[in-house]
Image (cartoon, rainbow, N blue to C red; front, side, top):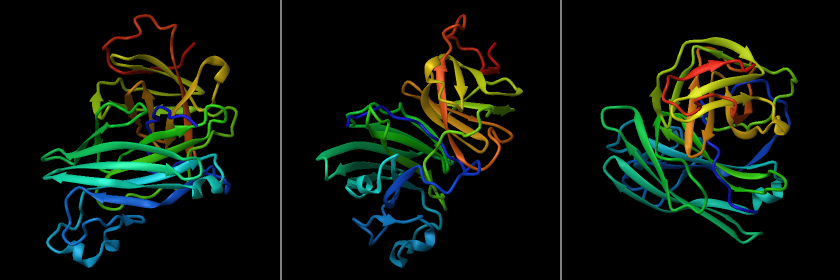
Length: 304
């Protein structure tokens, strides 16, 4: 197993009818770290779905009802339950100053003597419901600093088997209130003619909103121009022979994918895929585009 890059994923809500079969196994429970230091809970990791009612009474004394927090949910993708049972995740330390927390994370595979670590710093931006997230101290590539809205999510590929494509992925949510846990990992669509439906898209890169042109279109392959990065082709199908690679996920009316160390998020007025599941998104840079890397507004088209 080798360390791999990250796959950036946002899951606002679940999105297309899923079969009963699971495509991954959750490692333990959801682990929660609060942005502020809560009295009488030093060293406690509150696990589960992180609803406020599950916080011990002592933690509620003198604190707001909705506390900003970070949730960590680790999944083994296409791995057996035996693999999942050999992995342990947690924190080696949490450092806090007002409005900011730094969490040192680890994922240890006891069967294979593998220890993966990274550090994440979360800062609440004053006067907003936004959070700045920065990664460091990782042996594998991580995204550049991100600005997340309340409840948004990032996914990190902690490890990947290059031969089989099996992965260990940690999903990180930042926000307050109830943030639903995942029901499964993303999967490929079954329909051969599955189309991406783009309607009034709003494009953000690393959390910063980009100018984008209003458009309504639907096609198996969609082209998007990302200011300063070039034009990319998006598809539900792997299309490996055409140079596409797994880069993100689609859920309901949102899609997210990685462009190098950048995270691109596109929110639409309607569902991008019909149904109620979460799907893999494959991308390829459009090498045929002229003046591919420019600063124009984000635009969408169906490639010829």
